[in-house]
Length: 555
Ligand SMILES: Cc1cc2nc3c(=O)[nH]c(=O)nc-3n(C[C@H](O)[C@H](O)[C@H](O)COP(=O)(O)OP(=O)(O)OC[C@H]3O[C@@H](n4cnc5c(N)ncnc54)[C@H](O)[C@@H]3O)c2cc1C
Image 1: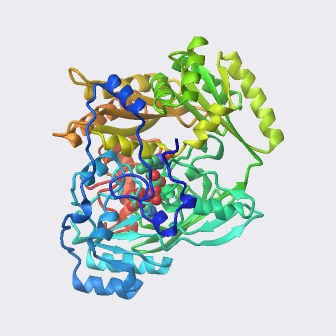
Image 2 (image 1 turned 30 degrees about the vertical axis):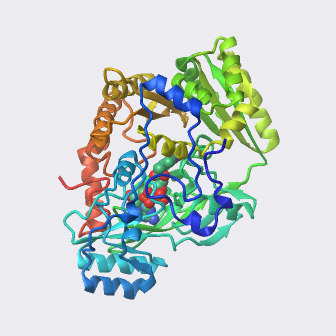
Image 3 (image 1 turned 45 degrees about the vertical axis):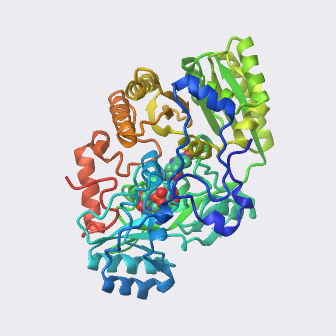
């Protein structure tokens, strides 16, 4: 059963707009199989109920605080049709897609909206908008695809007069393709599918496929240091960026030179992950590569998580890591085998039980590249995995993962509709600390989401593997406390974040900081690190209008 929408089959209009209260568009399918419903009932002690989102369009939104003179100035810069103060447009740019965002909007909460949406058509227009907003004391929140899950769009106006959402969707052209050097310059508003389609015409690929691929933008990836499903092989998004152009309130700044430079510290690294607080990324130069001749995905099973983690470590040490490595813990493996409710998944479950891997861990690995090279890598890795006591499950398991790799967010909508809390959190740790971080985070989530007769389902997978360690991605499903849904998650998230930081985990591996993680930032980068970010911001954005409240906030 396919849960996700093939965006290539959607009209341009449908593709353009992400649902306000969930994932996908008007054409999305949200179905929870009956077997899944029953299994979740048993697993977490939840009473299914219908909790559909309220009709947001019927709600009244607050009047815009944008002064008339500022409105006229913005219209002069970008044109009348690219300045919107109507409710639906402001609502659409007013939040991301975290559980907290969705619960607020689903409950009809329309607070925290920008006062105006401005859609510039060029770098120069962005510069002019920023200068004018600095003069008029208006906060500017860059808006890409709106898929932030850390409150990256929800910093608020701070001490400024109003909020301008600066939507980069019109900055979506490919400006140059240097196929010889494998460098492509592109606007920040382009989405991944469009970019990959355009690259395919030249036999090229970027290879960045996060789960938000259908809706997130290239500029958003750079601003948050995103990571995709194939990042073990292709590299994190920050490794795929050779340079960016940044429009700031004090002028134009180009950083990063290919192929490499030793001209002082890496200023590109300062801009990547800056989440709009220094200005707006208006152009990216991306490192692409030849499209792979073959893509091969396969499943493996390990008897336990520690054994499987050790298997990945061995692969990494031997230089045999695949391009995609996704290792599910026992609970996620169980859910993957049960939730689809399919006969194939049931047969696989029976096979694993028969081989003594009943409570084991599923590993999906993917190989991409030239046929011969993939064959050599695969064979060497397979024999190492067998020495680590893994069982090969074959290509059908890998293909099934590939076919459903963007399904998660659609399933989440179906779960939100029946009274469940569904949220994710992620971290990374060294091989030495990984299992301790896993145990501590899991325990904190279970403790804070359990009641006398209910317990959460806490699932985890390793999604990215490095020579020194790996990432951990937790998915939590629990009965939603309808009286205090936001606090229920906030308390659990706070406990989990404290736990993972205290055991050596990082604050965020790829979701970024936003407002949600900002209170913990100094624990990771130190007070001096936070002061350095403030100093850079003060130089580039002296009046503090760029995304106030996000990443760093004034004490
Ligand atoms: C269902 C789901 C799945 C996800 N899966 C992944 C995943 O697999 N991997 C991953 O890394 N992340 C994932 N995310 C998180 C999110 O998709 C990423 O953070 C993504 O990079 C955000 O891109 P966006 O275009 O939607 O940015 P937005 O959400 O619009 O913005 C994110 C932040 O960047 C700033 N920003 C946006 N564009 C610019 C710009 N041009 N210049 C300066 N600042 C800018 C914004 O102000 C904001 O602070 C997921 C989110 C969801 C909801």
